[in-house]
Length: 227
Image (cartoon, rainbow, N blue to C red; front, top):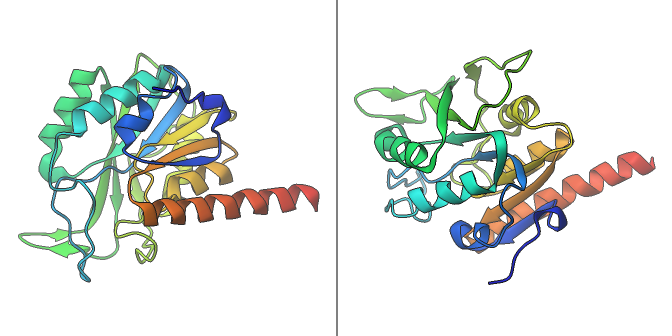
């Protein structure tokens, strides 16, 4: 199995199963992980779109074990998760070695689904490897959400929500990894925040979208520097 030297794959989208791809990456080479894995809720959009591997949980433990290995000591991971499967996510995080050090709720102005209650929030856990230093200006644990319209991905996350997380938990010259990068919102947010980034995506169409968005942001940055 060939090794992917992380310092040579910056500003890149890698196509494939994230566990297999991460196994080829160098241990302790990533400064921050921000990811939005399948929620294990058998998601189906109003127009019938689905999420790969959202109907099984065998990948959860192996994926977060690789993320933990790739993180540098005393670093953070922010992971969105499905509340209905929180026991599976928390068990995997703790087994892997992560400490649960924060919980963030993103409030919506609209209901994304209805059942016994209206779904008006997203949520993410702040996970730590080791004991990172406290920030002098921590982000709030309740933040406002922005609706993307899910135009590029069935569960597309808003860049303006992701960017403050990157700025808060990744050093200015750091490398951000998103193993479930979807349409590339984390990668665009990382570039806007001045960080390096690597994304991994299983589905070919979404991988292509992420590449286009990242390349567009890289070219915009180059034009700004040249202009």
